[in-house]
Image (cartoon, rainbow, N blue to C red; front, top):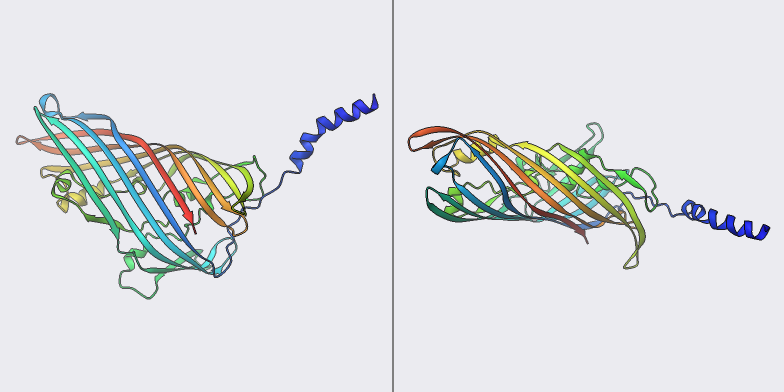
Length: 350
């Protein structure tokens, strides 16, 4: 009887013992000084028009529209960690190796019995390509100073740049074991969706039809507002060796929403002739939503991310309030449209 009780006790207790002995992982950004890493970030979205409502135009004046869009962007940088602080760089020299993107949009419109098909093709480039920027931590200001190396006469390019391209926002505060979960701060998650900040991508080429349609050359990341709502839940899925290197795999569940006012940028496009004549922009709002899953692989020995993937359903809802001249009459037109589909974000280091 005693033997049976002992065996039963062992069976009942063993799961708790195993859980108590589960390996703890300390996921920290801790690259060695002098380390150089080349990082490649890519995002792609394939979207189509799912819903459109136009108020202020009726009967034969209201067009029927079909639209699809493919958006791509890539950012490749090489980071040299000249000096390290506590979990963050103290001096970082970044070379912007390759920056670019492209947007292809197809639109079919039927208005007053006339059918019109247009294709918009646009590529983007950045004046930062090939340049070096030094990010130096200023302890008094609790912020990074930014300067071209060597000095450059275009300081405006530095304004929107961000130092963090290390996905540090996804890491837990302390030690975790496989199965542990934590919430990612949405204020920091913006650095994951738009790594490096505003890298000054602008349209490089466009065609006459694109100009008529109005082209802002926006990438997916540029449509994400600065303030995110929703949730990002991270789970340490496993700790194991990958190609002989100890790594942690973190699973992500992401539900995001943002809203951004694009009225001023749209008005600027009109002033620069990138929109049809006879249109006055009153208000434009863009809502972004993403419901997806992701995976981060963190190199535990080198102290930096190895790979990152995030994909899911994405929607972009645009509300446009304009005053339009039609047949000599000015009409107050409100148009709400929703593009939806899939998007993917990826990153890797070498």
